Length: 294
Image (cartoon, one colour):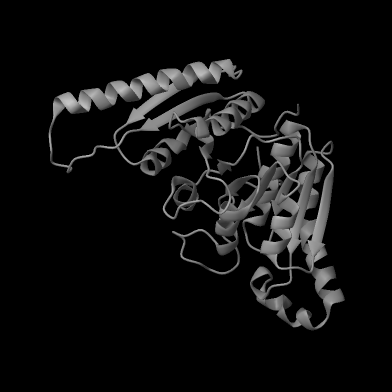
């Protein structure tokens, strides 16, 4: 296992709901905390079923005790799964997304469960959280395996942060990294490259050079990670979904070059959360670069 080349925050933050479907995400969070040498914080939020002004101390006590019992169960399960650092718990009476955003200041990343592909509900935590937090969010789908990490990169300012997070994950998991760029879509390239759509060879060369500029500094920092760089004259969505079929984790930025509302995820990121067959990490706009990270 490789050591990371920068300082980290203190914990991995996990959105826990106590269901069997949540167990693969808990397993992922435990492994992430172990690999990074961080504590694990399990957060459970319970819903008040009455109007906000309604007061019933007895009912509230019942909900609170149920939540405390669930968190004790979750902490035991985390230790059974091999948690090595501290396992802390947090109980809140508010929407899960609000709590995870509020508690993310000390988190290196946030892990949540995800429904199976094509079934992710609109407004779910996995869809809403990446658009609101400034921490990477991993939406876990399935149990994971030993496949490579795939990073989806475009020409936006998120590219460096996306590759940085992806190569760290590959280093920690001792697996390969594939960096994919689907260039055959005007929104995936800067305006200056639009004339190149008349010449596929020139477009390919320009996008390959962009990938090299982004990836090379990170390869220098993590020379033991085998990195395959794949500029493709395909649409980004199709290129990433094809690469994700063989991946354990797909890493993408929170939004691309389209200048979308900052409160919304980009179209490609949203599509990956809905349709990717593997777990998906959404990385926010850059906080550090390979040249300046400490």
